[in-house]
Image (spheres, rainbow, N blue to C red):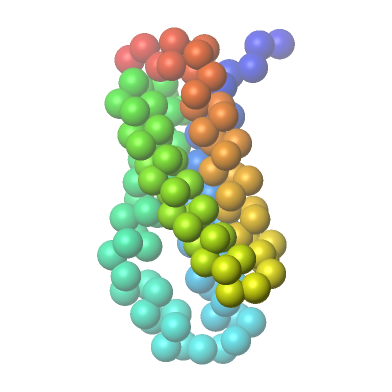
Length: 125
């Protein structure tokens, strides 16, 4: 059985969106803070990240070359933001939470599969 790297990367992108977007609701259910929920759902950056993540996942699943480029750019952008967030936590002597580490691992694994030479070859449409 041959592994399809584009579909693995698409699955990771989908899980990332679910984890990222679902974290907003997990925070609401654990704190009951409706104001944070409303604020988070009103941020354009949240919706842009969610929609772009799903578009990238769909495009990679369908093996479009534009999705490979968009996934590479988006993954690198999010990885830099994640590392900056982690460095901020470490500089304040705060522990890195499960969510922060999970996002970092998902981004690294997504970029790993996207940057495999066979992944770009598979994206021929």
